[in-house]
Image (cartoon, rainbow, N blue to C red; front, side, top):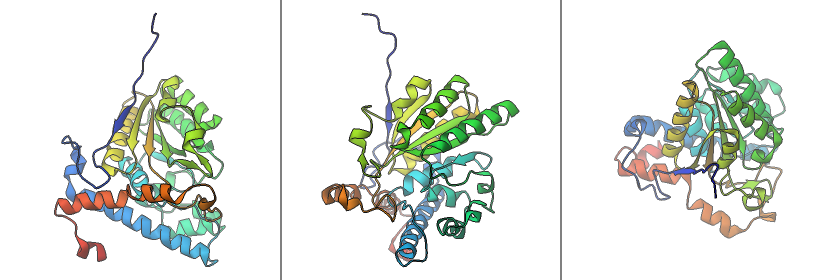
Length: 307
């Protein structure tokens, strides 16, 4: 039998669920403990912001809101790996990435309060990022178009799109990664696999062993990452961005995480998933993982957290 091609998908993880380091080859940025504390602070402020947002919605002061609870490592990892000149085309819950890139909480509140002026981000580098996209996966095509413009203009910039596990089943996603591979575009497609596309579980969303491998057919570099490990997220994103920027083509990065809250404040996840599953997911909380690692390194403690 003649084999036309074989493929493998790497899985990347540095910290386990308890925050213990399981690899010795830490990337250079992870050895800068001050920087890592800064990432943790952004993750922590994102979680506090998220809880406040849900409270505002529950008291009638905010419209329907999409929570990012449990996605802090994935989102902050993506935002922190990007350069200011890069462009983010996102869906509707990647607040950690946006806050890192300068979006103000008041702008998020304006948007979810029904005022489109919230999309007019005032701070750099978010000012040239795309607006929130509620239609599923259409932002992937915006990223491909931006990447094509960067290539034509010979600008060393990368377009990053984020999409959920459900969104990766849409034709918009496949069209975007196909043209990115065919045209060798500077693009990184991030699949934030949080296990649930509203009420549709990952196990029936796709027959693929990984969602990362969807990029193989398009000729893209593909990797699956522990999306609750910010070191792994930042490393995988950094590598993908470097390849794209140097003309080596686009990538698909799958971040495996979990949606700890409801899909939005208009949803009640208790109707379709069990309590035991959610309890198990909480044991892999990205906040606990990084916090434990920083405490073990001697650069974080309860007093600093409280402050």
